[in-house]
Image 1 (cartoon, rainbow, N blue to C red):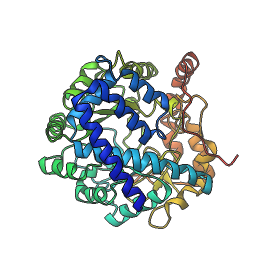
Image 2: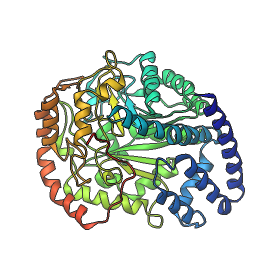
Image 3: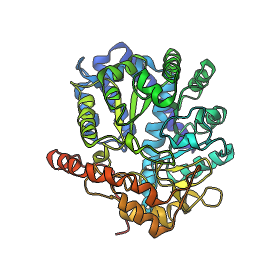
Length: 464
């Protein structure tokens, strides 16, 4: 960080502490101050209408976003919350967004807001339909390689990092080192939570700029059916520990044809809220890997129900006080596909730079290419020139909803399979999605044509 940036952190950190104290004393009056403060920090990330809506609900006791904000302030450690707010608001929102936009113009390619990377391929669970469970303990990124990813990313403007795997907490010491060394970055680790204990929670609070997304698949029966007997209780125990230590965490939910009803039930969300979860990230099941199970793909009716449920759940009056996102059904808010570096890309534990965490093809590797080199190579440039892959942003993905587009991308660029267990052709992968894509098209078009849509603040950056 520059001296100017360090001074900004001091000033804004002091302002946060003052506002935090005000809100605890008088929420009705001072939640507005918090909203104004957040808008100044993160106005470049989220549209103004979201801040306006928060301000309108700030003095309404029944508004779920007021309840959520007060829960966040009451349940999360003050110092850790301040460090996360500064990392997201100042590091990513102010400095990062500006640099990302400038570099998109300067280099004529996608520059991501977020980078995902896998510290290790190792995992201590074997969940049904999960490709990571097939990888074994073969691959890991060294600490210096992870440092290089972050330093290169920050030079481009990227200040948000998500850690996937494998089970990333197997590398917890290295993760804490990265957090300490980069206070201007936010980190989120997707974890099965089996390695969360008191020492981990204390270290998490010390760094402050790390949050966890705990994998859970519904109630105990549906969760353990996919993740293994006893997994649910271990995850709940981890939630209780994190909550007692006042750590920031949420849940990561993969919804399938089999667990759909459980994970979209109000009882499930309320249980997660009662355990201290502040966000819920929903992921549509993707039939990736040699042991993929296409029968787990949700039906068109289930996905339509998910679309409607999301909007009800986030409604200020009818919803629940938890921040819920679905990366497939929220495509209309971000202009379709965000992969290929448009908003994010993925680096696997062997160093392969992939356009998406679900699309395992690459023409670059961190051990021979810089991140900028990868963004300017044929595969990522094909994303840059072809996004959006569908004008209906409820059909955003070049694999799941537009499988012919992915076939074309791989054929045109010569990208190779980077599946660490069993390389698979684009034809084999896309063939699992053809029937699903055809079945979803009519329902997606009905929803798209029958509902109003936002105008995403994000843009497509092309050379034309």
